[in-house]
Length: 331
Image (cartoon, rainbow, N blue to C red):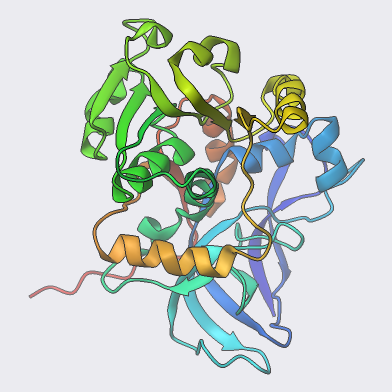
């Protein structure tokens, strides 16, 4: 049995991605086989396609360790391996594929039942459920800093996958949220629940008079030195990565040495994915979290999706519709 997948055998540009027939995977003990209906392309995928030196230590020194990328998936369980007790064929599920194995930019993916996977909320479309990775990284920082009522947080890059997730999850925790976005995304940020919105094109966001308990730099562009005056005494700056060319690393090291926790890149706790997907399912079912979809592409045009994400202009997520949408039944 074979399936179609976006296959990557060498580092490089999106032109290195090929749609091929490859062997269909079979679930190992404790795994389920998911028929993928929707996946996504995000910054992590683009970083894996052309990683810097530190990235190659993770993804493969000379060539990618895995041939199929893609973290986020939503689909239907087709088969369950031995020992699976909580999921069954026919269940509509969403979650994240392991970066240690082939990913979700394919017709099928195998996922451990105890991993980051959960049953989708009823009546949610598949493309609305490929939201886990951005929310996962956003939530790790909000959890580590115990964001809640009475706290003020500024989210820089609030229109991206991580930033838009941070706005919604911080609001769900009761925090007061200021979103920093481009002019064209101001209404979008308000629709996500931001209490205040700053247009970084029209003004220097670092010069606003407000001070914050946390500044969340979600896109790796603003820099700590520019943002530090926005922090209250004892306030903290968190980013989602080490920044271009690792410029946050010395600050993170100094924060660790001094113990002040001023600058950090909060990472999700190992093995926390399963609990997180259950948490996110509850937020979506309660109407406290929704997907922000920028563009949609079929699997056959996934290279175009990579090229678009590489521009750095996307808002929210870019969806890959792997399986055709079911026909609508007339009344």
